[in-house]
Image (cartoon, rainbow, N blue to C red; front, side, top):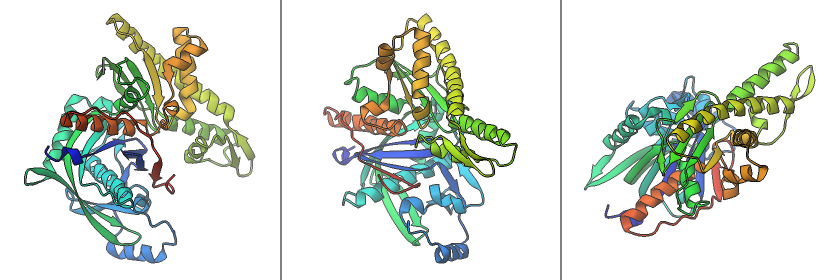
Length: 405
């Protein structure tokens, strides 16, 4: 790895609803879905009729898929696809081709952001998370799959990316040298971020609870290693809560109007718990949300408590817990209370033992990809024989749902 001093650490993860990639102080976020594109003639017609002022790559992205010898729409652009293929299903990667396409999309979009500052990515070291139910064998298989699709040039492994901005019809070819890729279980990224910040590189046993749109993941980290026997991905997430709320609103409105669960979901980050039901009026679902959240938190802690007993029988204890993912905004406090009840903690102890990622300066939705960037950064430091830089600060988040923040 002769060029390691030029290597840029990147972290990435494929979530149930969104995929996130991180480099330095930047994160790109796009929907975890690919789709077949319109025909060439229909694309031309679409461009003529498209009145959206948003011509950014992240909103209008297609990536060429060599395995199928065709273009594929990625993220927001898939709204024009007849058939959608989500990268994951019940928390598990559907197929390696789509996962590889997602990595290409993530690296390309990060490169677009860096090019704005005159810092294109030439060499990359990738830290990446795989959902835990796959097990070690799938980690190795996916790693091999990636290596087989790199182009060897004078001993260097090159990742070739062909991308198209469908709105402008611009095509870009980007070639990035992949110096290495290091993979771990998906929720391990959060542990790395906490290890680098709160723990000051000291090792503490940590239980990560990652709550996504359609799944939640449990991952105990014992002595710096993921406990694969207790790790799991459970097919229940924020969608479970919002779907139940949507159905209850439908029933209580005498089945006059069905509120799409997505409309409920969109209000949660804004802490807006009222929704207008045509023909009925404004419906306040705050109490419903509180009850559904408490029920789900109770089910989560029931599974965790079983793991705690198993670990105790092995002579292991958990020092800290953390709740991450898109569901952390709604469930963090309730899970903390449930854990406090299980352990008999005081409020002060619960506040110390259950870590809120926001106190570390990173949104719970993004802490995994930040941690995987740190994992890659650690690998670079090891290769160069230098101390790793434990600091991180996210200043820019670019999403296919809106402008950069």
